[in-house]
Structures are given as C-alpha cells and as structure tokens.
Length: 547
Image (cartoon, rainbow, N blue to C red; front, side, top):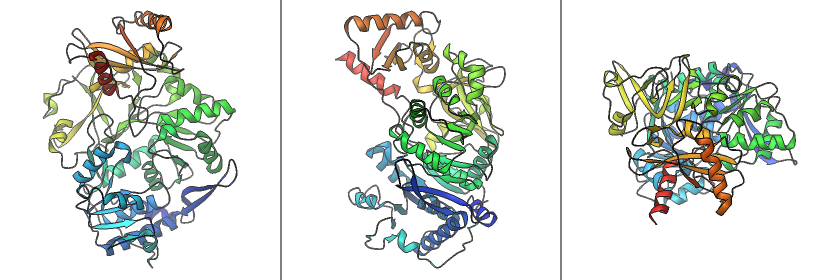
C-alpha cells in the first residue's frame, strides 16, 4: 500500500476537517493567526504538486532532495512525492556543511525541491549537486528549467491516482544526524511507514479527534496519515534547545493539542516556563519525548502541569522506531528510585510486533543470530531488535549494513548501538551508547548508571562519563556541568570535588572514580540538542592533559 493512500482516504472521510495549521503572525501578545488546509485542500494541493512534478519528468524511484521549512507546503509536497513513487531524501541541515554535502553527494538526487536560498548555495557546491537535473523553488525568481511552487499551484487538477507501490518499494531515505557517528541514509519502505503509523496510533490510542503539535516536522506526516490535525509550532526544528517557550504556550493555547512530541530539550524549556508563570496544560494528554534519556526531574515537573495527561518516552532510532515505550506516570511510581541509584533508565516493554534481545557487546560483524552470545535477564549487553518497522539497509552502504544487521532465517535483527538489559518483567533498561562505555582494565562502566550517581549532588545539572586512554586500559573520569554554570577553582573546587567523590564511594560501580573535570556547557547533538557528545568531551580533556 502506498503510504499516500492514507491521505486520500482521510480526504474522502472528513474533507472539511483541518489537516494542518501553521502560525503566520503574532496577532496579539499571546495569540497568532494561522494558515490552514483541510484534508480535502491538502489532498488537492498534493495532487497539483504531483501532476506538476510528473510534467517536470519525475518518475517512480527517482530520488529527490527535499529542503522545505515546516509549513503547509511540506506535507503537501511530501505526500505528492509518495503518490508518484518518487523517493524523498531527508537530510538534517544542522549536521554541518561537510557532512551535509557528503550526504547529498551519496544520495545522488535527480531533483531538488527547496527554499530559494538552497538554490543559490548550490551554485558554490556544484560537485555535491551534480546529479540534480530538476529544480523546484519556494521563491519567485527562477532560471533555466527551474519552476516555482507558485506556478505548480496553478495546475487545473483535483484528483490524482497514486502509483501502485509494493510493500518493499523504497518510500524515502532518511539520513541519521551523525550525532553518534557518520551520517548514514536509512532506507524506508512503504510497509515500514504504514507499520509505524499503525503502531504509533495504537501505542497512544490516538483517534481523529486528537490534535498534534510536532516539535519534529517528520512526525506530522504520521499524525496526518492517522487523520489527526497537525498544528505546526512557531520554532526552528533544527534548534529545539533554543525554542521560545512563550511562543509555544501561545500555540498550545490557540490550537489546544492533545498530543505533543519532540526533543526533551523543547519540553524542559516549556516546563520551566510553565512553572515560573503558574501555567498548566489541561488539553494535553500526551507529552512524548524522544532522542535522549529523560530525567526523573522532567517527569516530575510535568506531573504538576498535566491535569489530564502524562509524559511518555518511546525508545527507538532512525533505523527502528518505535521499539519500546513507557509513561512518566509508571516511571515515577515504579522505576525512578532505581534509576537514581544507578540501575539505568527504564524504557519500557517492547511495543507489539517488536522482539528485543541482549547480546554480548562486540565490535565484530555478526553474520547470523546463531553466532551471537545472547545474555540472561539482568546482564548488560548490546541491544538488538527485530520487527516490521525495523529498516533493512543503509543506502548504498553494504559494509555499514552488514555491521548493523544480523541475519535470522528470512528475517534479521538490527543492532541499536546501545547497551542495556532486560529485567525479569520484560522491561528494557537503557545504559548508554556502546561507543560511550568505558573499558577499564578490570571492569566496564556504562554512562547512564554512573552519571545518575553524580547527578544526585544538588549543584549538578548533568554529568558525563568519559574513558581516558585506550579501550581496555581506560581511566574513568566524570565531567560535571553545574546548574549555576560556574567553573570553580581553588578551595571551592576542592570542596565540590570532595563532595562528589564522597557520593561516588557509596556505590560499587562509581567508588573508584577519582578524576573529575568541570565544563561550562556540554557539546550536544545537532538534531535533539540534548544528547551529550561524550567522545568530543574525551578529546577535549585528553588534549588539555597532553598540553
């Protein structure tokens, strides 16, 4: 089934219902004016784009680079590409120029649909864009065979029949952000998109009466496919950690969403603003946070702000989403105290259709599941998953695909790149990235359990475990970011370090950590603005020590 058929069905079922709303202007201090498209209008606009793109020469299987800002055109154009069987390529522009150009060149797109400035920038990096033959711009100015969205909207069509797509046909290529390694193109099929939509809808019991506010633009495609209204917030999705909570609260008050989702960096700012202003969020039933472990403190903050809802922290990755899910309500009642004592972060039971195993961690390729050393409940190891929403390959990267996939008959397992364990109740616990574990001479230390102990100090905002030296002989060190942002020295620093070491000595897995460093602010990932780049911290410390 072509994933675009869901939009067509929704347009027939409830044509006059708003599908997408977008804030265009501050009308007053706390209210906006909104542009919107009903499901029928979104379907028609998508059909106009599909017809215009077909006239341009795009056909099934063609890869098309899509760089549109969140708004009404983004879902319309994306569904148009799906209808044609064209493969949209999504690349995070925040990954840095070098990685961005490398990903564009690897994807080899035949078309570019983007904001006007991208077409100007393209002139300076012709090698990366050399495969692009067709160009579509949001701007008024065009040259050569380039066409504008304005012209495409003048197409005299109402309907368009989506091309027939097999379940295994490529629907899109989503590049990882490169926050924990080299960016890679993840191949999504129509079956995977359909499966993800069904699972997410069932996970949260979502109906057409729910209203979505996505902090991550691609998420709106799922909720629109479900028949929900998607209200785009006034924020830059490439910089979630810099969002303006006042604007988001105004959007929430105007649109009354029941379901909001995005990076914890967004909702941390929103929660603090609400607490400061004495605001509650009565319409919201689900605050869904993903991209990094969520602190107990953040769950506690929202418990006071959501009279009719709770928080949720689904676990997954670009290659496999969702894998598991757990509510903040469950965490606060059952597992928060264990996380605070260094047991890791509970990320819930696997969602229906997903299998999870824990295997002994290795950097070697595992050709078949029979070669993997499957661990017992409670043993920490590498997390692997299997299910219909798990992607099969990286785009044109056979080596990286073989490193990440484990064959199992006609199926396969995906190696998440994370370490954790399953408890006796079937709950999955997260202990950190595999590349962030510290391999000391006598033990292995895992970031999340270790950092939880140092985070107990009231002055600590967050901490980061790093391993100095070569794996197998690494010396564990902890880097501290204080709540007050101070970089202490002299007696004050000595007292602070003594207090931290005293806390660490109470726990078997932290008692031997002696090296403590301070940082004014941690380097974080570009997509969610919250994952700590521990490898960069390690490099900075080793460079400092060597000098």
